[in-house]
Image (cartoon, rainbow over all chains, first blue to last red; front, side, top):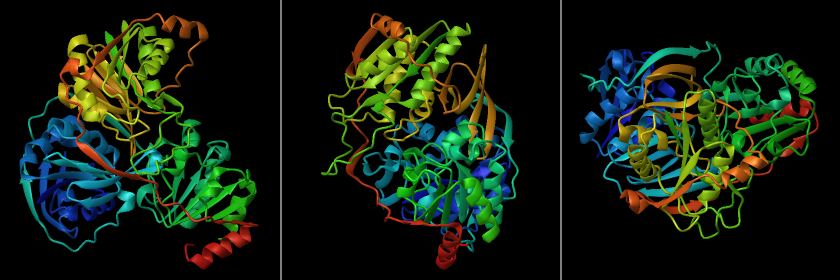
Length: 308
Length: 252
């Protein structure tokens, strides 16, 4: 059976990592057609055609599809849905915005954040902030799914799928884009980084967060933060790791001044190696850490930077 | 303008979740239940719109078991004007899927004609993050999800959204569905006099059948399991040992 996969396209550029991880998950379900939609999407379509396991790429370019607006993107997907049994996407904020809308327009349930594929209608997904894993079997004719990217390896590149250009659906004209505020950074992307260094409430201030950033730069790591740190204004929202932020599973996760609320653990407990630095030896983060260091972060982190 | 706020009764966010030994689900018997934290933020925002003179009435709706009326009383104590309870399940372990919830809400929207629906972006039990988007689809309304700022200005609203890359600001046509994120506001606590007053506010009780909506789940739960536990780690005495251990593992 055929699968339609909504690629992650931002300002005309393909997010290869997120898309290639979703391709890995989708390959088990059938032939994968990748849809690249946006104000400009041709370059993204070209990049997507090289992902191993992609059978075909559809490129839809239209001003109404720019900036990932949900209403026009969902209308496009629904107009294509007839040919596909599975309509899937990586579980990014863009896809979480669009895919439930698609599902409701098709009168089916959405399966959000699937972390495992059992068969064509049966999927595993974390619930209760990852404190339980539920296996669900869909009785819907079409399955609309977002895949949790941290649990799938990215498909390789070396393919050469055909690329077809298609038109947009009628623009419902319900919303318009005003602006994006995106911080430019040379650091690796949080959800695909091999190492993540995160800071929590214990870091104490936005200025002190520079210490976390210095350690991250020393390690070539991405920077993350707990909800407490973001709520306190120490770090921007797109650094938040947790139940309602980003889910990461790097080779090494270094948690600094983070107590380890279950909502934070939900976003990082699948990391290969977890290091925790906290002055409170009772902090729950130590229960999931492979290596715990009970110490004042303002002494331990500079020492770590020096010795690495 | 009338604002409709759907609220869900969920396990309290501080409670440690336990998976039932028979794999049928999470144990919710005799567990503290509260309003979904995101929904509290939605209720707060609706009340602030009323206080700012941009809304006349705030109506809270809950769909689930009969006990969800406690959750509605909380919304009323915070400042909602009236409430609608739609009883759609007998057992506290039955979760009504977002699609069915959205269908019932769509019927209520037809009756109530609100100018705005404010909902939490996700419920902390099923973590679906779907009901607002689905309701928006069924009504053919605009949607502004994951809002951290909201400005209602006549026939449109300006919404700043928390997205993977940072923040996105969009303008949506009213009527709209807005789903709220953590940093939109800090919900108030209900004062004791307001809790007392809330007991006298109107609460209509309906059933899913009153709205002609079939709530049979589309997703059958095959099993619910504990996630794999991490093996216990070790406490290292100092930075030197930590660096040595990480080098040994080849991660730095």
